[in-house]
Length: 249
Image (cartoon, rainbow, N blue to C red; front, side, top):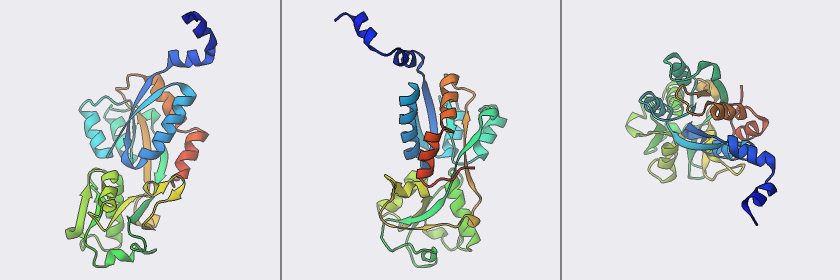
């Protein structure tokens, strides 16, 4: 069969998608790594655009982008970093929006270790992992919570700090820490809570974790980047976001 005959068998709509397809280079806060992979798959299937995902701490991404790192969009773990980038000309302010509101949990891989009120923090544990408050908003939220509980000073010599929220969870998951303050989304897998024990930290103990997205000024494919931002607000994306325990504005 000749090549032109093969082309005739391909739907015109699919050919159009392939012809217009672009690539979105997305810098994504570590806590949102699993949800965004699912959303990116749906986005690609629905639009033909692909998404190249990179995960890490919001603070590190800010430094990298300021130094010229080639990203098109940032999905941060806070709202202050995208706003700062817009003020500095690194991002397009009009594109900024809150895609999720995160929740903080104290988690241990040991069943029954973390109690329903977080009283374990007042006990004789060996190590507590948190993300670096200077780099990761969830780490800052953990610090705020412990300060309000009057425990921040007493845990200083038992803290293990991760560069990102994913590394922080690894400390607890591998036994290098007894427990860790992480994102609620990290304790959800296939719609179910993972093994271990956890305390959902009351929202009153920390400032709201509003996670904002922004199109970056250096985006190479603005059309694809803007399409991805629009898709993040779609019913399909919102369903995924809510399934991982996030709230929406």
